[in-house]
Image 1 (cartoon, rainbow, N blue to C red):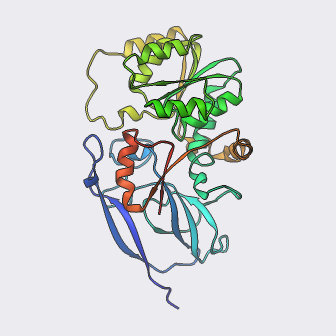
Image 2: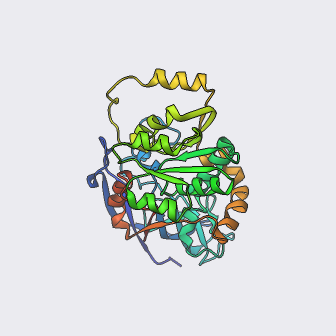
Image 3: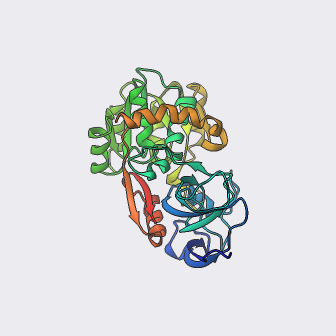
Length: 341
């Protein structure tokens, strides 16, 4: 018997940004989905994750992953509910996480779907502290950062999805933790609610000096999410044998020409050499996908016991995703940015 037709709302890429994305780069469409074939499931999106890496996928420059093609659905992770199933591994009503994109419904063969952990206050947490951002924070810190009690860690975007987890885990490991965030409200939250030792407002006119005062013993680990002026301020503070897990460079994601000013590469190279600094980029599921159980076994108890806190910035409606994403790149969100579909 023919299944009832499902109407899918989706947001597609219609042009590549020149600099910062604008609403005109996106289009909301409505299309009918085909009937399921054997082995497939129909998914209804409940929560869509918006993350900085998506800006890179809007560009066709060479990268670690293929770009979103013009006319294709914007990429993104989501929590979905199984609405129909012709796959024996999934039952109607199951909640799963998968890279299903900016759309209200999708069809999957199930190969890249993972179950949402049981007992979460909200299923959306599978996109945050117990999802890709949390795993990025944990693996980058523990494997590349190799934290040791008594060391000093600096993390940029400290109130965000990755930075907030990095700092809290570092505190659990006995480090002095200094965050960097944009604005007094975010800095107060990072110190008063998350327990960082200090948080410096990168909008301050005296930002570099304030960061140096907070890092009075230098910096042993700099968890890099941002780049730009934050990296410039951290560089002279690095201690010998410092480690830099390189997660993201959000300050430069919208750049469409070479930066102006003096060439900073010689100073960087000299610091890396003379202080024997280790800097390593990573892509979490490419490099650590097989260690997902290790991450869950460590993080889930911390979250359950309130040792790692997590804040969400919830936006209502798929149609709001483009504007919310533009705001994410400008630092307007406060916490993990999620769209409730």
